[in-house]
Image (cartoon, rainbow, N blue to C red):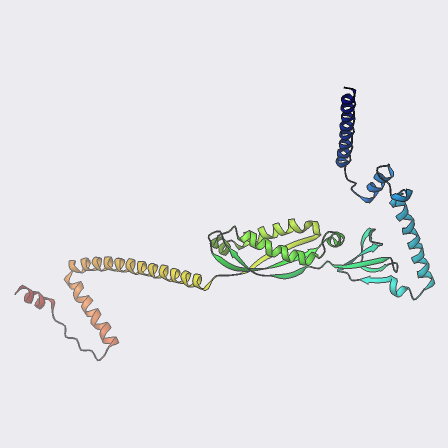
Length: 319
């Protein structure tokens, strides 16, 4: 009996220890991850973890600050020692339409982009990149697009953009110009895919504004300003062009026949009115006959006309 009680106590103790281990692991998992290197250093220095061999991590900001200052001082000493030869490597020039983003030991300087004109860099620890602020124009390659009414068209466009923030155009995206070009092609397909063929052909201005707005919102975190987008050409398939030409020709023929029929109807009404007027006065008919003979004699001189009185025709008709 005592043996069973001892086994039961051992089982309870082991289960209690297991629950404590599980709780400690879950608390460690639920702790927020450090958001930066400084937070991680504070997390380590607080006693959460420690390196092996009894080495405690110090504040990396202090260590990097010391190293940072030491390297800057060493670089200035190198510039002074090699003066004036060092000026060839330290003085740089950027044009009026350019800006220079300087990285010192991998960090952007506090003043941001430099330029235009002359600026100074430290050898060995400073690197810089030039950014062109002028407006750039590129053609979007022809895109095969299926419209909302299931018509396949090939559409190309031209995009005008410029970089308004040199710092974020380098830090937030690898290649701002290439990314903008790829995004422009994708946006062109997405926007025109929601339009019908008639809307694409008739509402160019609205489509251009919609594409420009979408691109501008998407490229704003990259420091890129999309100024203008123009849809250049909409190429239809050959079979569709022939069908549309046949449809247009048929509609033109139908309108021409309708116009000709309306003209015949108006002419017949005019002739009926003229006949009624001539029937009221026989002398008017004779005058009309003489006028017709005068016109024939003026145009066709070789034609011989023998006028026959109407009364003779009426007598013959009676017999």
